[in-house]
Each structure stands twice: as structure tokens, then as C-alpha cells.
Length: 55
Length: 352
Image (cartoon, rainbow over all chains, first blue to last red; front, side, top):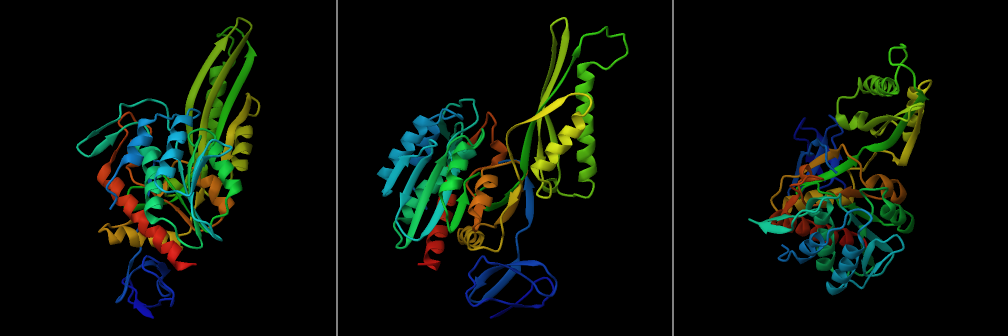
């Protein structure tokens, strides 16, 4: 399975056993992606990491 | 979506500051049995432990049942439950219990829910659990928010500095014990500032916190004391900070560390646990995000011990942690419990 990086439009290989929510890395631009849909394949930019002072 | 809040309200109604958790633990053990857990008991550390199922694969859901002091009248107003521990962290713990009960028995899997004691103290409950379980997956209960996943916490070293000297006249020109304590503090702050120069995120920075200082004399000897802590990023181990504290105190006083120092810890993102949470949040219409926590939690204890895919998750707004206005939205609680049911079903479906 293949998907397209929404950042650089590079080709991203989706593992056969991938599940929605999986975090992948674009081999071209290195950005983190989230597999948000398997049918059809849809890749989105992975959620950003925010800081939070709490527990 | 969960339609009952009895687990949550029952837990919050039983005030359980650190070292006084027994009544809440006993109630939770009974609650888990009434919800259909195969077994529930109080373990040797005083934790409430409930299990569903048997098998080679284990999921541990670890929350904490103790709270900070300060009883808050328990009430529900406009869909918001007010009470000590509502958000930190009985909300996440109750959501674990309700979600595990709703998931029920899955062949080949054991789901373990732990309500750990002493998290706001020295984490005796988590240390006990860390040595006794070997989960395939784990989720730690803290109030990340129903649509947010916490990935990491900073570490901590707590310290107490002391300076002593014979009393002299204040016009004699030598430093007082108070000035010696300030010197120690300034050295520590300078070290942290140097280390933080290249670190943009607070998660990657050292944060020294001065919590208490006082001085006293008996007419012959004067004594100055200062206590506080240093929050640690992943790249700096507690042993390094112990050395720094000793260097800062050299020539002016003595310093001791208190409690058990903890390393910072962050989980991997590319795991079935994080993926299941992301997918579960999206399935309820949420827009998930990740957070890096600047505080410290039981994750730093069980993370290295269990060394398995894990995440920190639970309902609630952590800005209410430890505040007099501690509260949690019942709607948010229901959403988090529903996310957790989906996560448990997906994780247990993938491996049999």
C-alpha cells in the first residue's frame, strides 16, 4: 500500500498490517504522519506536541 | 458512551489524601467486584487491584487513588463534578474501571486495573506494581484531556540545604547563614540557566524550584535551611543533579536529597497504544493532540520497568490539578471512557 505525504507529496509505504492512528515518517521530508484512514488511504500531519505544566 | 458516573462519584466522595487511601481503596475493590471483575483486592502496598480474564497477554491500566490534601465539598453542578481528586486523578482511574468492565472478558487476555496509593508522595504503590507486572501494553491514568495523549513527564530531584555557624555580630562582615543559603541557590540557578541555553522547550529544560526557607538561632549557633526541587529533562540524570547540588553547597553548607529521585521518561509514539488512542479519539469526533508534561508522574517509575508500548491518558483538565477549584466535566469523562473501551477492544483483538 502507498500513500502520499501531505507535506511534500512524497510516496509513503504503508505496512500491510498498519492500523488507523499509526504514526509513520515520510521517507522524503522526514515529517511525522498519522494514518487517519485505511480505506481509502489517508495520511495527515501527526498531531503536534504541546507542553502542559500539569500532571 | 458510558451512561453512569457511579464509579467516578463514589471515588471522589471518599476523600483519600496520600497515606489515607484505605477507605477509597476498599470501596473501589467492592465497586470492581460489583461491575463483574473476576477478582479485586487490596495488595500488599495498599493498592486497589482488579482483574478481568486470564491469559498470556496482559494490559495494565494504572491510575492513582490518592490526592493532595484539602477536602472540597463534592457536588455536581451543570454537568461538572466538583471534589478533591475529581481530575487528579480519580477521573482517569474511574474511567479505567468503567472501560475495563464494559470491555469484559477477552480470551487470552488479562486486563488489570490498579488504583495506586502514594503517587503524590513517594509513589509506594507504583513501585510495588512496577516490580510485579509484565504487561504487553499499559496506560497510565492522568488528566491529559479526553482528546489529548500525554507522551512524557520530566524527572525530579528533591533537596534540602543547610548552613550552620556560630553566631557572631552582624556588623562583623561575614556572611549570615541566610546569605549562604542564597549563595547556594544562586549557584544552582546559574547551572540550570547554562544548561538551558540550548533547550527551547521547557520539557527539555531544568527547572529549579525553591519551596521553603527559614533560619533560626539559639544564641550560640545559627542555622539556615532551604528546600526545593529540580525538575529534570530526559538528557540529565538525577545523579548529575546530585553532583551539582553538592558542588553548589561546597564550602558553605551541606545538601541532602529527599525521597526517590526520578528520571524523565517519554513513551514511543509509533505504538499500538498511541495509535489506538488517536483512532479512538477521532472516532468520537475529536481532534487529537499530544502533550509533554512538565510535572512528574508514576510513568517515570513503571515506564522503565515495564518497557512496553504505553501512553498516559485520562479525562480532565490538568490546570485544575491541586487547586481549590478541582472539577471534571461528566461529558468529558464519558467520552474518555468510551475512547478507552475502543482502545481495549482494538488492542486485545490484534493479538490472541
